[in-house]
Length: 86
Image (cartoon, rainbow, N blue to C red; front, side, top):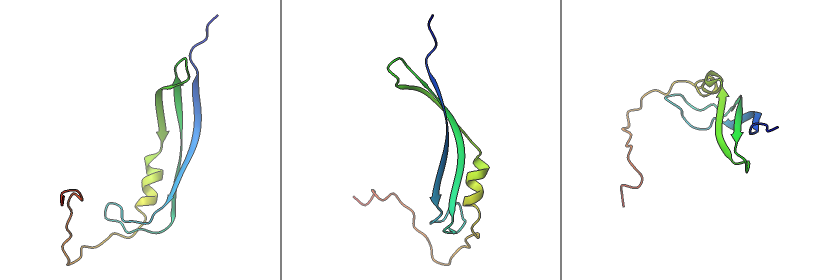
């Protein structure tokens, strides 16, 4: 009798502190966290073949959009590739 390859299921928690602007919202300094779960299919030598991750994006982005909207400043902002000066 031969069984199939192992499938590993796991739950995770990811967190960090909201310390910079995000999509026009100011940082709050609060901890932002979300939970999820995943499955990992492995081959015979137990190397990962397929990974599936499941989480609720609203849980993550809800914490990132808590900050007050950033208003436009009178100073122009310059955005460029940091490597283009070389």
